[in-house]
Every structure is written in C-alpha cells, then in structure tokens.
Amino acid sequence: MTLDDVDFVLLASGLSSRYEDGDKLLAKLSGKPILEYSARLVSQNTKSAKLAILGPDQAERRHIADAHHWTIITNPSPQQGQGSSLAVACQTLSARQNLRPFIVLLADMPFIPNHHLEALILAFKDDVDAVFTEVEGKLMPPALFSHQLTHTFTSLTGDKGAKSALGNDLNLKKVQLDAALAFDIDSAADLEHAHRIVSGIKSQP
Image (cartoon, one colour):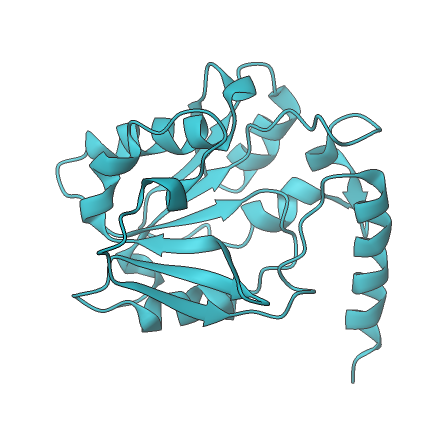
C-alpha cells in the first residue's frame, strides 16, 4: 500500500482560542502561514481524496487549502471542537462508493515529514484497525484508520478525538516520531519555539 491507496483528512477548522495574536494557522513560520506546511504535505498530484475541514468564516484558510488542491468541507460548528470536524469528514467519506483507509492530519503541526506518513502506511496491515503516531508514550495524529472506522467516527461530538471512539478490542499499532517533529502550535510562545526548531533543522549538516 502507498500514499495513493489512502485518503486524507486535514482538520483545520479550530478557532485558535489559545493563540494570543489572531489566527494561528495564518501566523508566519519562516515566511509561510502555518497552515501551508500541513496543506502541502500531501502531493497535489495524488489520486487520493484530500478533505480539508474548515469553518464557515475562514476565507484565508480556504484560499491556502484550495491552492494545494484540497477539497474544502465546511464544519458549520467549529466551536464544538476537533471531534465535530472529524465527524464531518467521515460523513463525507462515508457517502463515497468505495471506502478506503484514511490518514488524519492536524493543521497546526508544521513539521510532520512525508516519510512519517509512509511509515504509518508500512505499519498498516489487513488485521490492523489504526496506526497512531507515538511521541514519548503519547498517542496522537497523524493517524491512519481502517475504512471500517469511517462510520464509527461520523457520530463524534465535541472536542473528543478518534481515540475516544475506539474500543479496547481493536488492533492498534504505533509509529514513533521525534517530539520536535510532532510539535503543535497553540500559543504565541509555541510559535517562538517553532522558530527555534526551524533554526535547529537548518543548522543540521
């Protein structure tokens, strides 16, 4: 299985409530909006479905997602949290004739490398229900889910993520990722730290 054999969901409808200076996904990191990093992670030439979940009044985010060939799906109630956005995405996917495994990405994680998505796919086998990213013992996105879970996630509500809907009897796998690459931006202090991460990456031989 390759990246062309899975679909992609980009959760980008958050309200930036913890960010002190406007819309965090439009804040600049090395001259680019934070959203652009996750939006360009998946090739524009892929045959896969690429669903970007956005709020109804996020025109600049829509412009970025559209420029990278994401299909924009509106979450009418982004204030309800991440679970509601994933539910909207899976409601769209469930209407498709052929359900496929899908990878869920968060828009505020600018350092996820493409090879990590490939590692998630390598860990996914026929008997696996989900493959999570593991960082210092914590499971998080990006995560790859079996097509059988599409309908399960359509009823998610609030800020509960996919893990809250998974039973104890499911077969879950984990792929390790360095904490710096899994860094997510919620505050202005986080953005400053992200600039330091970029400086460290550029200084590596």
